[in-house]
Image 1 (cartoon, rainbow, N blue to C red):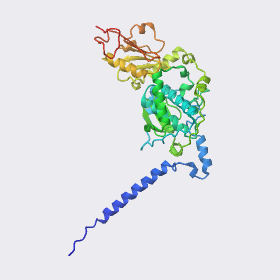
Image 2 (image 1 turned 90 degrees about the vertical axis):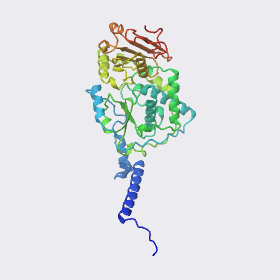
Image 3 (image 1 turned 180 degrees about the horizontal axis):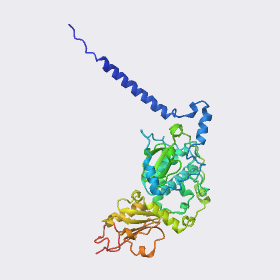
Image 4 (image 1 turned 90 degrees about the horizontal axis):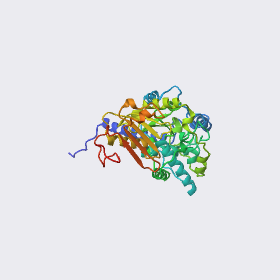
Length: 396
């Protein structure tokens, strides 16, 4: 009697078919989301008009004055941000940017991206790339101007309400060394040539985690890069289909945009007591600062150019200097003053003479990227030439 082929049980066949159908449906759903079919008001009664009405009232859209909750101190903002969960599911990266402008457009766009990257993220490579990606996501979103410099300087003519705070808070007065510019320009050119920083996906918004803007809870939190949280709009306007406007060039002149912004003295906008109180509040979240491995208490100057640090017990000279370098990031003039005795750390600026006399480590980075490092030999005993501390002579 001839042998017969064994037949798979009917239940197994059904299981295989069901699995294949499920995979196919998931693929269709993923494609539908990519095309913006979910949450697209244009597919509801009223069509395109409904979509445009929704676009006009998106939370955090330019035109609404962005503001942090006035009663929320930095530590409360930190806790409130931590309580907001990240959106579930994979983060869809943006499409590669296709630059189609002129050589002049490319030059202006590169300068605007580079300056924004440095001003917003210091010298951090992932931080700068994340900021650049947000700018390019906005350029291709209909809620924003269609040029890089237009996005960056949107609202800069106002003292409040600018889209990137450094364009209206006086920070344009800061100068960056050539090495910082070169690194930031390189990242900007790579992004204009199609490099995509995938971790932030389609984010069009971000803020530091020690503030809590009014729009924060109305958007999807998609990523955290160092101390910045990144967000995309919900529904259709946060899908790939919404971030696909064609770039057409026509960049405004970078130098002219910078020149038209009034440069104000940040410290002149409030009393010294206000500045000291703000600095002391920010100190409560010192564990978030770049130098957290060595610094227990970190108070940044309101303009970002200086830091007061209370060192953790047992911190060595090498760790202290490494912390100072991370805080400054290699971007323009910066000073770090650190104390081994936390009780000696002043609550704010200006630093009183009695506190200066007790400094354990002084680190200064000038605008030519040259370091001057001084330390208290009673605190950092035994430091040798060739260690991380570049002192004129070693401590005994």
